[in-house]
Length: 295
View 1 (cartoon, helix red, strand yellow):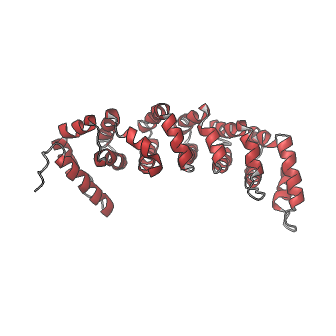
View 2 (tube, rainbow, N blue to C red):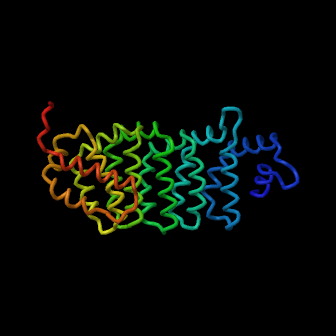
View 3 (cartoon, rainbow, N blue to C red):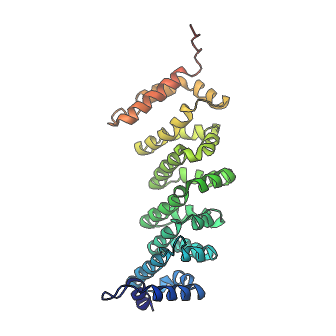
C-alpha cells in the first residue's frame, strides 16, 4: 500500500505524478482517516517503510490548491493526528519519524494553535527530559517551533496563559540536564526579546522571583549557562520603567553585581557582548544614585 501511495504522490521514476490520481488518493485518505492510522501504527513498519510514511504524510501536507491546503484543513478537524504524532516521542523506535511529521504540521498556524491550546502541549517537558539525547533534541526543536513560528498567535496565547506556561517553563530552566537547561535559557531570551511578545516580556521582567532566578543562573558552574542567563538578566536591567521591587534588588546588590560583572567572561571575544556588558554595568552603577540636576 505504501509503495502504491508513494508512486501516485511522487511518480514512479518514469512518469510524473498525475493531478487527478493525487486528488483521488487524497480524498480516499481523508475519507478513511488514513493519516491517523499511519501515525498510530508507524511502529509496525520496517525502517524504510517508516521513512515512506513520513514522506507520504509530508507530501500530502504540502499539497495546495490555489490558496487552500486541503490536508491542513482536514487535520484541523482531526487534532488527534497531531497528538498521536507528539505521543510518538514515547517510543524511541519511531520518535524521529513522528517528530518529522509533527514538525511539518507545525508549519501551519491552525495546527500549531491546536497543539499549543491543548493540554497535550504540556507533555513536551517529559519528552524533552525523559528520553534519549537524540529524541530530546528533536522534541525541543518542535517545542521551540511551536513557540516561535507563528508569533502573533503565540504572543496572544502567552498573555492569556502566562502563569500556566511559565510554571511549566520554570522546570526546564532548572533541569538537571545541561543541554535542556541551556536550550531553555536561550529560547527564553529569544521569546522575551521578540517585540511581538512585548507584554509578556514586561510582565516577566517585573517579577522579583524571575530576577533572583537569573542572578543565581549567572553564577552557574557552566560558563555557557552563565552566558545565556546574562542575555535574560540584561532585559531586567535595561528596562527603563523598572518596578520598585526590581530597582530595589539591583540597588541592594549594586556593589556585588558591579564587581561580579566586571570580571564576567572577560575572555569572550564578542564585540556585541562586550558592549552589552558595559551598558548593563553603567546602568547598575547608576542605580539608586541621585540624578544630576539639569543645568
